[in-house]
Image 1 (cartoon, helix red, strand yellow):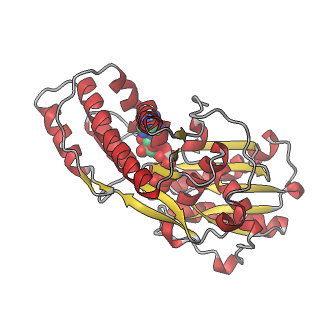
Image 2: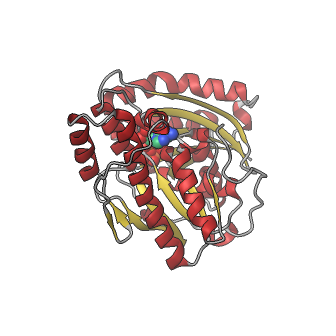
Length: 345
Ligand code: ATP
Ligand code: FE2
């Protein structure tokens, strides 16, 4: 079985082709990068409309896959920016009709989680999903993924992006801030906002920009923000691990590319005698392969949609969708051999 997956929830248009053993046969992506400010949904959607047909062709060519070898077409149904979601859904519907193959809607957050889980080989880990729009600590329980804790305001990645733009940089901020922070060593106090299992970042954004205005060097700010924000994420992850008595953590989402975050979570979990895993970077950030893989899992359960039932759902939360495959094969699927905490792709 081979599934083609289309991702278009926000800044990235991506097409992945994945087989039934979670082998990525092809991945073709392109990120919309505004020259100034954040993402404008209409501009990002125009980018996706322009690029997706070429990315489909490239993925088929790179993977040496012919259209008739594709068994289903999966797409990210939500959550995300409406115009961007519709661009990907339209291409997916068209391919499904043209190739006469089932159309499989997939939740973007669950897809981040599932690609990380299958690559990790860990069967029932706690999941730290840290991306631009989302920051959630997740555990599976009775038929769906439950959000144990999350951001009360903005996603960690959006916070890093806004901060970097406020410091004079361009989108995306996370990777640039990581490089900047590597040279820092002085910790400036910033609001540490943990509320039970939840976190908040807007106070830290205001405080960091105020420190910059007072002349604190960008490098020291980047370092202080990373240490403070990733400590908050590590703390809520540890709380989830302790409560659920699961000594396994999997990271997913674009911010899981960050070496400091990976290291802090690893130190925490190894201190408790457990293990952690983060996918290669190309599969942490938004990508079509995670949509294709989750499409496989959904397809096995018959979770396909007629075109007229495939409307996008910009606010579809992680805990809204059912994941029946977790009951059936959640503990039995063999995992490919990938080293724990894989180094950058
Ligand atoms: P979601 O809908 O899941 O919230 P998203 O649209 O934010 O997805 P992702 O590709 O999952 O997209 O994550 C992008 C975010 O990851 C951006 O905010 C970016 O700054 C951040 N990011 C990418 N690499 C790094 C890094 N090395 N360190 C910190 N943040 C990073
Ligand atoms: Fe994402």
